[in-house]
Image (cartoon, rainbow, N blue to C red; front, side, top):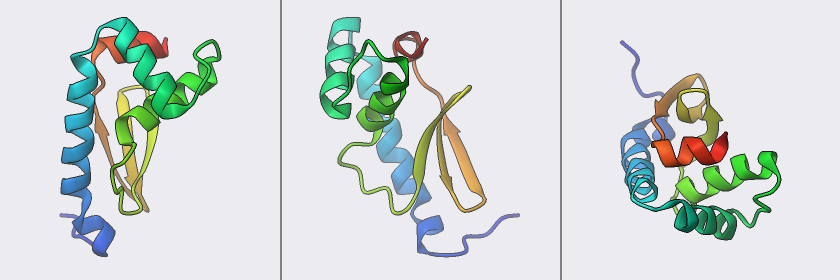
Amino acid sequence: MSRPHDASDLLLAPVALEVDARIQELAGMDSDALRFRVALEGNVDLSNPAMIVDGVIEACTNGIDMHHWEATIDARGLRISHADHTIVLGLPANVTELLS
């Protein structure tokens, strides 16, 4: 069994819950609202696929104190990592469609 090694590890649950709530909020948006939110929060050009990835990460985490956890896009969803610990939160169909 893996045990927390530091304060960041102890804060995984609140970080994951906040990010998951944000993902749920994005899931309820239509395509136009989602594209606007990703462009606005990520300050990205949606015609550039690499920038869309950055925008989605920012839309999922903007304003959330990540406590040194880092978010990246994974084939299975949004990966939250710190040191050798990692968790993947699934992304809804509208977000994965925007990413593709």
